[in-house]
Image (spheres, rainbow, N blue to C red):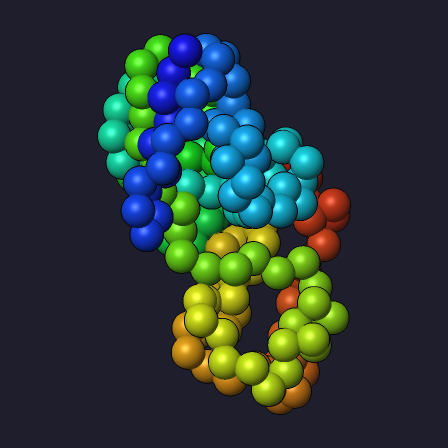
Length: 158
């Protein structure tokens, strides 16, 4: 059994089986991960930072490396939790600050509200709306040309 520690406002821990995905630990901890690509390593919605013991995860494979190469905010310790399997020993992870959106229509329900976290693009992780900004119709109109369709992304495009 492997312990996965989540560093957010505080540290919480969950125990997982060897060879479980890091994503499975996030889901078991009820951390809202959108998984727009359904675990294929094509989107950024399960992106996390491994802050302790990255050697206790499987190595980064080609698809994950390609996706991380276009991900805004990716760091040397970035992983896609759907592609990282627990292989031995405890790990500690931290999620990037931000909210991934699936569509412009998802933002329309937030018009007039100030966002507490950055609003992020689900494929590239780009910041679409900065933290603390009020979501306006003008901002939504500017984003209407942004492609949010994760299903249209293939490994050949990344």
